[in-house]
Amino acid sequence: MKKHLIPALCLAALTAGGAKAQLEGEPFIHDPSTIAFSDGQYYTFGTGEGGLVSADGWTWHKGGVRPGGGVAPDTIRIGDRYYVAYAVGGGGMNGGHASNVKVMWTKSLDPKSPDFAYHDVGIVASSDGKEPCDAIDPAFLYADGHLWLSYGTYFGYIRMVELDPATGQRVAGNQPVDIAIDLEATALMHRDGWYYLLGTQGTCCDGPNSTYNIRVGRSRNPLGPYVDNFGVPMLKGGGKLVWGAHGRGLGAGHFGLVDLGDGVEKFSFHWEADMDRSGRSVLAILPLTWKNGWPVGQENLRPGTYEIQSERGGALELAVDEVRLPFDFRKSWFRNPADGPDKPLPDQTLEENSKVWPKGPIAVDMGDYMVRPHQHWTISPVKEAGGYMGAPYVKITIAGTERALAATPAGEVITVPAFTGASEQLWRIDQLSDGTYRIIPRGTPDPRAPLVLAAAGRSTARLVRFAPDSDAGRWTFRLP
Image (cartoon, rainbow, N blue to C red):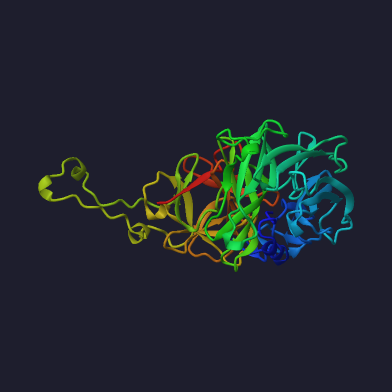
């Protein structure tokens, strides 16, 4: 939090909470912690006391209890403990940068649980207000048996210390290491032998005038040196852009990794200003992909009409008889210039294509994409149908119709003549870390694990268990 830039506005932001960028409910928060799952619910905490809670990651409400107040907390689960780090003091409040990072732990984040009770660990990092560091904005990373904590703001260096994962206390004799400048609200990730330092550049706490954006560097060593994709050290202000202002959201900051497994990664953050909610600060959750070893933020799949192409080959389509375009093939080979200038040929219309469709349910298969209406699918969020981590449930219909994609108890995929809102007609679309997507019906016949739409063969689409090492359950969405 760059509270030292605009103290009065930042104080207001601390007490005001948040705004909505795309989540439902009241996702109002500032400086959200990494999202944690506890006792069947998701929790994130922010500056001030308390935080947000959600049963599905889509609809968020005020909830959660975090004593101690302070600013910019972070959470991590190690074994049966949830550690919470937060800062008291600093941040330019009252003109000072003297601060302490404190840690506490509990075995549950649910205030109703018998395991809910915070235990104070104590101070693990501090700044005296004169040294070139402001000890706020802590962030955890647990990797290879070691627990690391980064902290700091624009006032000097970002620093790293090592904690004991068994107690949360500072490792005896461990001294802070300077790892970056020109950042705040840091976060840490570990992937494929690389350590990633993410941080927020720009200004905060100024609503729609905030310039917050998320940057990243990486290192083979948790203590650095961290460099960006051009080799610029983060100790010299480097950092590759991960995500910034987009659409109606301004001021992206406070990255948190949300790893859902099976190659589905998302990231949480706050918008400093959601322009659709009075410019308030709000929690947001979006897909995270990887390109050439670097994290890349993505937006959720936009509503619209698409060709849905299997990575195995073949476009999703209605299993109906072919309706040919009227054409004399000789015109493409032996056209006479005397016939006049070339003219655009019209696409096949829905009316032309649908004349062979049965009235009832129609099976779905895969075929060579031919720019035909029975191969065009419209993706639309369904109001009040709920959602999952960071995205709403959608209906998938043949463009221009209400004929809706649906799952069957036998694991088959069909279309029904009209969308009714039934569970088997609602779909979640997860973007995978390689940029492709998986498509999951809300209601599946297997309660043990979600089934996904997959290419069971060159032309057969079925619901099967998702295999992360296979292309069968991976799809791309292309504009027709």
